[in-house]
Amino acid sequence: MQVFTKHKELIYQAVESIGNRVYHSVYSDNVKNYSDEQKEKGLAAFQSRFNMDFVEHKTKSETWIGEEVSPYLQTGLGIRYPVIETEKLIENAQSAGKAWQKVVIEERAGILAEALERIESRFFELAHATMHTTGQGFMMAFQAAGPHACDRALEAIAMGFSEIKRFPEFVKNELGTGLNATSIRKTYTPIPRGISLVIGCSTFPTWNSLPGIFASLITGNSVIVKPHPKAVLPIAIVITELRTLLKESGLRMDTIQMAVDTTDKPITKVLAEHSAVALIDFTGSSKFGNYIESLPKITFTEKAAINPVIIDSTKDIEGLVNNLAFSISLYSRQMCTAPQNIYVPATGIKITGGTVSFDDFCDRLRKSLDDLVQSKWGPSTLGCVQNDSTLKKVREISMALGTKIAEATSFRMPDFEAARTQSIKVLALDSGKQEIFQREIFGPMVFVIKTEHTDNSIELALRGCTISGAITCLVHCTDFMLSKIIEEKFNAAFIPVSFNFTGQVFVNQHAAFSDFHVSGGNASGNGSIVDPGFITKRFVWIGNRYMT
Image 1 (cartoon, one colour):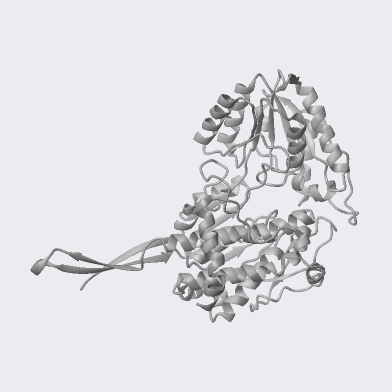
Image 2: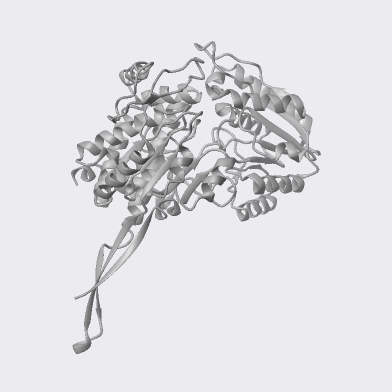
C-alpha cells in the first residue's frame, strides 16, 4: 500500500475533479516547464532506437517485425518488435489476470498512478516517437501523446477508483427481533470481466489508447494492446513502464502485453473474435468499428464522424474565421474532432450592421488559411499527413468534384525536405450534392456548403450526423432562441454543441476531467471517455450472503 500512500492525494483530487467537472490538469503541456536536459535526453533516446530491436518487453520470440515509416523523413525507422502467438498472449493474460484481480483497489490505483509518473519522465521521447509515426507537429505530439494522454489515463483511474469504492466491501444486517432475530452478513465484490483488447490507431496511438488501457487495469482486467502497425513505438514505450513497474511490485508483467502485426498479415480479427477476450476498445474507421460492435463482446468504439459547423450570425467575424481556420489546420484535419462540413446560408452571415456574403466568407477563410501557413507556426500546426492513402483520397475528390475556393499556400517542413505535407483543400458545394459531403473525408479537406437558410443548414447537418455520427458540432449564432433550438435538436441526437468559439478555444480540443470525449449515443462511437459507463461495464458486482 506504500505506492498508494505516495499518490493518495493525487488520486483523491482526481476523484473530486471528475465530480465537479472543473478544469484539472496534472501533467504540464508547456514545454518551457521542462529542462533542456529532459528535452535532449528524450531526443537522444528516440534516435538511439533507429534500426534496433525493441527489447524492453523482455519476451521470448523468434520473430521480429516492424514497418513504421516517418512521415517527416519518408524512410523506415527500422525498429522491430517481438511477435507473440495469439494463444500464448491469451494464456499469459489469463494467468496474469488471476493475480491482478486480487490486488486491492488502492494498490492497483497506486501502481497505475506511479506508472503515469514514470511515463512523465519520457514525455519528450514519446513526443518524437509520436511525431515520427503519426506526422503530428512536435508541439501537438508532445502535448497529446504525453500530458493530455496521461491526464485522460488519470481520469480513468479516478473514475474506476470511485466506482469500485461506491459500495462497501461488506455489511451486516439485523432482521427481526427477539427469538426471531436473524443476522446476515453480505459482501460486495467487483469481478473483472476478463481479458481486455485495446486496438490502437495510427494518428493518436497513446491519447486514444490510454483511457481504455487504464480503465481496464484499474477494474482488475488484464490487457492486450494491438497497436496500429504504422504507430507502435509510442504505445510500446508506455507499456514498457507498466510492465517494469508490475515486475517491481511482485506482479506478473503479462498483466499488460503488446500484440504486433503487419498491414499484410493483420491479427486484429483473430484477437477480437477469441472467446477469451471479453472487452474491446477500438478507435478507427466506421467499417471496422461496426464489425467490432457486432461481436458478442462489450465494446467501446470511436469511429468516423462528420463534424458540422453551422454559421448563422456572429459578433466577431474575424475571430470566427481565424478560429475556424486554425481548427481546420490542426494536424492537417486528421483529428476525429476536426470540422468537416461548414454550412453557410446563401443570404450570408449576419454581423453587426450588415451581412458577410457567402463569397466574402470564402475569401476570408482563404486568406486566414494562407496567413496561418505562412506564419512561423504554420508548418508545425499542420504537421504531416500520416499516410499516402489519405492524400490520394483527398486529391481524387478535389479534382473530380466541387469548386475549389481555397487551397492555402503550399509549404515545406523546416528541417525535413522529404516531409509528406498537404495544404488544406476547401471545396464550395451547393446543398444538393449530399452524396459528396454526407460522409467522412479524413484529412486536409473541408466543404463550405451553401444552404437556403439556417434552418436548411440545421436539417442537413443533423442528417449527416445521423448517417455518420458527430463528435463535435460548432455553431455561430447570436440569436438566443435559435441557439436553444439548435442545442435541443442536436442534444436529442446525442451530439454535443460548442457555441461561438473565437480566440484560443477550439472545437477540436476536449479537456480531461471537464469534457466528455464522444457522447457514445450516435454513430461516431458507442463509448464516452470518461463517463461511468466507460468503467462500470468492465466489471460485475457480485453480492454474497452469509447467515451468522
